[in-house]
Image (cartoon, rainbow, N blue to C red; front, side):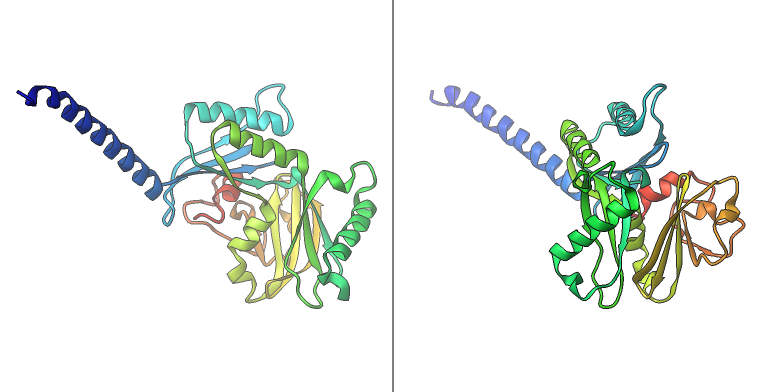
Amino acid sequence: MSRLPIEPAIRQTVQRTARLALEVNEWATRAARPERLRVYLGHDALAVCHFTGRFKPVVRHQAILRPGSGAHGLAGQLAALDAWLDAQPMRGEIEWIVGIDHVRYLLLPWDPRSAQDAFCRSLTTALFAQSFGGDVPIDAYQLRFGPLAFGRPRLVSLIANDAIRELAAFSRRRACRTRLIAPAMSVVWDRYFARLKKSAGVLALVEGPRLLRVGYDHGHVTTFSIQPFSDTRPSTISGDATWIFPAHYLAGTAGGALTLDGHMPNDDAHLAYALCGVV
């Protein structure tokens, strides 16, 4: 007699248990194969790579996105990314690789007081005004100081605060977590540091219409300059370049290419920055 009212309760318990097991399985799958979006903010386009997997990432999708007609700047690029994510939805982490349009660089000369944070900031402020004038205050940038080494100059990256806020807001709007916002030069440097610390030379990085020339000595930056660049005249990369990135620009130069697995020299150069540090 008592079995009849118990059966619906048992059935509900079984259903709840099954739903819970399904949720746990989905959570375990996401934990084992987390989704990650890596976006390079190039001069005229975005390079987007969608990865899954933590220890051996697999590229699921990759694309070059350009702002629509009439759209300009970072807002136009993010609008193109929004549309792409509507068609390729994901939830996870976003890593932003910030290109030369949104970053400025300064090389601080060595000084015995370089270990003092206040001194470094004061020196950066003075060099910033000297290099870029007073049109944009230094407070409009977030300062990223490179490693400090005795007797060596110190590289400072300055990322526009407006850009950082826009990128963080975009991640939140897409229900993603911002995992990284880093200058492209730093990403390449970290990826190939094991190679750079074994020798001295010049690292040549091409970002759209700009060529970044980084002199180094066994893992320490010694010189830094930014020059105009045209991909129709590859010879603008002088013969003293030891390493060149992306490998797309190797033709006609004497330097060696910093290659990436899965990225061929004829592939779009923007993608190299999005893949760098992952593959």
